[in-house]
View (spheres, rainbow, N blue to C red):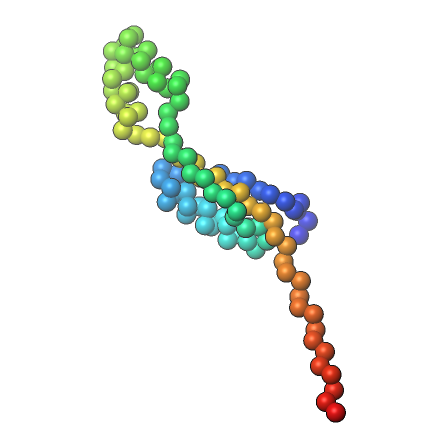
Length: 104
């Protein structure tokens, strides 16, 4: 394989961690055939940014239907992110042949 060796970081999105884990499992199997194995995993729950909250508050003040937007934001969370680090581990060398001395 001509690909560079080292560390790979991949991210998987999902509404729940189980959704992201399914994608991770598929990808990990493919990468294992190239001798890359997961070393660390980190799950971050999705959350709305500050800008989204400011827009919702502005809609309350300007238009009046911002409460619906805030209600939606409280109920529906954005997708979370599973971040996985893969490390290259070269294949083990084949075992050395054993030589048995002749029996006398």
